[in-house]
Length: 97
Image (cartoon, rainbow, N blue to C red; front, side, top):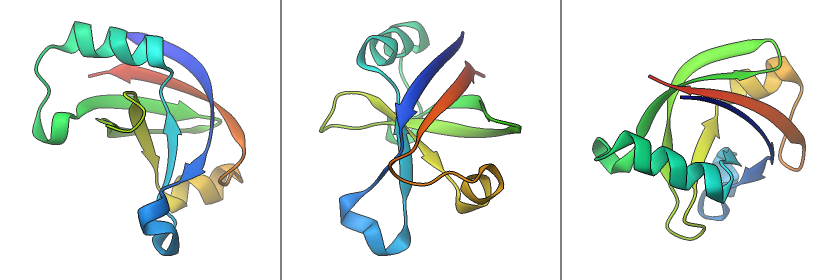
C-alpha cells in the first residue's frame, strides 16, 4: 500500500529534551493501514518505506494510544538534511513493506 499525506511535525512531550519528532498519519489512513496489515509486530508497529523531500528511508510507524493514529518518527539526520523541524507541515509518502 502506497499513500501520500501532509502532516505537521510535533515533538513528543515526554521526551522534549531528546527532540523526538513525529509526523501523524491521518485517522482514516491509520484505520486503513491497521485493517490491511493485520496483527502488527513489536509495539504494534508496521514496517514502511518513507519519502520526505529528497530523502527516502526504511523505518516503522507506531500506534499512538492518545490519538488512535499511527505516528512516524523522524530522525534528526533526516530533519537536518530536509531543513524541517517541529511545527513545519511536510508531505510524506509512505509504502508498507
